[in-house]
Image 1 (cartoon, one colour):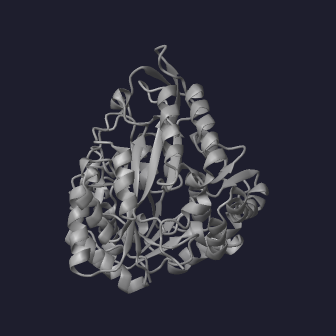
Image 2 (cartoon, rainbow, N blue to C red; image 1 turned 90 degrees about the horizontal axis):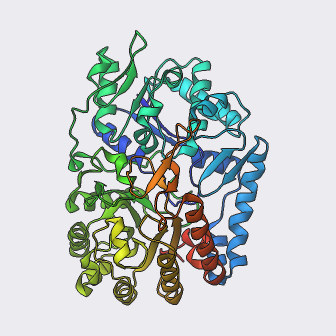
Amino acid sequence: MSQIHLLFPPSWTLTTGSAHLALPLLKGFLESRGISTRTRDLNLEFANQFIARLPLTSLQSACTEGSLEDMNEPYFRAEDEINRVAAGSEGEWNAQLGFAFSRFSHHSSRQVFESLDAESPFNQYFDERVIPDIQKENPPVVGICLASLYQLIPTFQLCKRLRRAGYEGFIVLGGNTVSRLLREISIPPVFDLIDGLIPFQGEIPMLELYRVLREGGDLANVPCLIWQDSDGNIRQNADHSEFIPDDAATPDYRDLPVGEYWGVNYLNVVSARGCYWGKCNFCVIPYGWGHNGFAGQRSARKTYGDIVALMERHGIRRFKFVDETLSPHFMRAFSEQVIDNGLDIEWEGYTRLERDWRDADFVDLVSRAGFRKGWFGLECLPSDKRAHLNKNDAADPMRLLELCNAANIKVHFFCMFGYPGTGKSDAANTVEFLLNNRERIDTVDIFPWVYTKHTHVKRVERIERPDEDWALEYAHASLRADTLNSEEIAELASDWEEVVWAEAPELLHPTYRMVSPWSVK
């Protein structure tokens, strides 16, 4: 019998070729410490049991034909089927984002609590497939990872039904969403449904939580734990643990349906915890790893060992590094390990436009090691105004495209329009560059800049709405004539995205991304 059940709740993206990494990381670590741990991906389980799967062959065929209509057909056929399920609960399901009720907002704690007894696509699934399984094993701890706001309502619905069914163990929530909403979510109504919250990295807190519960110890000794004491006080323990990435275990995917995800399947891995730069003015993504946004780097040797172990377990040779950004130093060291050992793999990852990407020898090295695609934060074309973003990189997108195309490395550009200090001309110049180089660019994203929780931005005023206390993004008003407001930025990004859809749909289409960049016949 498992001592800990780890659940990844439904209502996350379905367009990824791998399980989310959080549960495999925790399972690997806890099992290495002798704690029997079971993981379940309820997101994919639900989709595969109640919704027709999206066959890889149909995706490949659509991408071979290449027209917008061809790529639309399999994707929207699957999404339409999802929405037939959603319609019965007065909601809408976006395959890339998740399910959302039309009458309840996950941005509002009040509305989340009002939704707990509402008809939901997941109620029957929870009652018949999830709760009986937990009752059968009755693990002392049930951990649930919240990676997205879209998972909030399904998670709390599950917790309420689990309690109602008589489960008396310790329910603990973690994940990036918990980390970013920690103050707002640490309230009594939440602790009517669960027992604890663990922000940031979960390995040491989960280990200590299990030990304290097993030995009848004091919850005050569990690092980082937020909990409610017998007097009803919500307490936040200090983070007196220091986790070294090389002490992590290889991610353990063995409970999960590897090979059954949408599109070409790969395995997620991580080397760095957070972003080694972490100073971009607009970005809060690294916050989920800790208050300073960076919690250390796993060695190339250890990471290489993870890759070999995962290949042997699952027979998959495709890997996605989900680091916030891969450093050139790590990429060089890891590539040398791969080449020296003759390992035949393909890998992709997020990385910054550092000076190394102007170096043909560096690009050739990572290519020979199997690096197939880099996801780069271009945001907007280099100019004096781009400095407002504080990326402090060495962006030369034309040189990057030349070298990567010569080395058979595909390129994705993240583009973001409207950050204070940049404007309409930056957006226009960037899209012109994208379209002029569409044959060299694999994919792009075009986002409006949005004022994000835990960032502080000049030239604008954040607009907070009282009933959106669980929001992670805010509207804003401009304080200067040369700065755009929220509505203007949204319109700017949408208009230019429509231009790209019309002229180069393959750059944006989710169908193509479920196939690229992998070598699959």
